[in-house]
Image 1 (cartoon, rainbow, N blue to C red):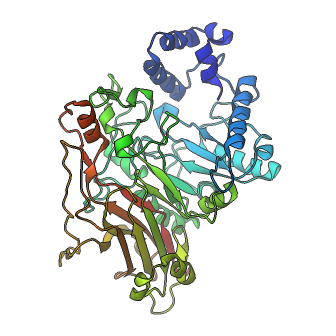
Image 2: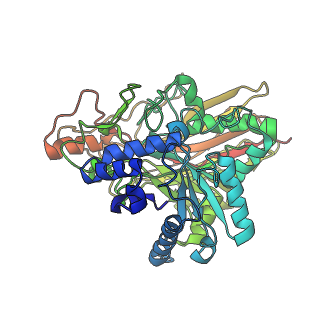
Length: 528
């Protein structure tokens, strides 16, 4: 915090240091992108000169925090536009991305009593346990409230959802589970650096798993991806691991809700495919971004192209009003869902008494809250003879694509300690019939004209609503359920660019997309 303003203006302390002077000169001579990569790599290695990097207690660090608080307070407009006070805690040891966004419920008077926790020793640590201790101290000393949101973990190279902690080499223990469950209420399941719900290697029977993948290496490309890392990077696998850890430790450390976010560094929330302004300035609209490299490490061969950057995503929050307190409380209780850039409206309720006629009501939320719990909630101790029932509903983005299907993803732990998952189609458009053997609904088709970057809503449905009952429920097995809503195929941002700029895409460039939403899960816990 506070480093880049000093670097840009050529602060005397920066210019007196060979490393700082080099990066300043690179920026001034048009090599800012190269300088950024060097800075990220040096930050991950811990080799940025201590003489130039602000830390808590310095004027630059404090000034950056004061400026952040001032901006949030100036633009917060309760009931109309909420600006949270927050910061990104940037754990990036060895280029392995373990970032967290720390969000305050509070006003500036409380937030200003602290300075953001750093990853730089001796004042900080890159171990998330240190961040959780800082958060606990803040709430105790300032009387405030704070939560952390873990970044998409697909650049962590197997460190985001550990069974063995990378910082200690020891198995995750009860204290880790309790602290992570307490402080990390949400997970960023999708963003510009690819999607983080699941992966074809982890979910080979899921026909929608091959989606916007970033599975080549870590954040700076210094270490290539190995398949054994994937289990510890993706949301669905983590949700399953959490069931097993809860049986062993008494607490589920991976009991998180879902959100999406952009992770864009442009200051713009432009995540629609037809209006995608990229992740950083070099990926802003131009004839060149379709063929340029986003990141290329010559030593490891890890290379990500600009066309592989995703136009995603958004965080959706079900709150009573648009205020810091109401939105933060909704995030704390995990009543949230993620989208990949679409603005569809999604509901997901679980209970023991939903009936088919509940899907014919025009106010599904009224029935949902009355008879069950919303996304992010818990079901426990199944009544005798009862199985979980779910009321699901989705409305299309008003100016977006129709809906293909609403699915429920289930994960569970059997009595022998084996983990399982299954995806159920529970509501879909048209007169399609599920396959009698697999239960899967056939593909919806496509109306996309890639060359013209157009599509029509002549297939799909504007809304989907249904009540679904788990046909394979075992009251003795802990489980989770979450909703996944799939749109009909539409042109990807690459198709819009190809049409707009008259450029030819590289072989293999994805030109269509099936936008989607992921709800926070509902968990079932049997009697102990």
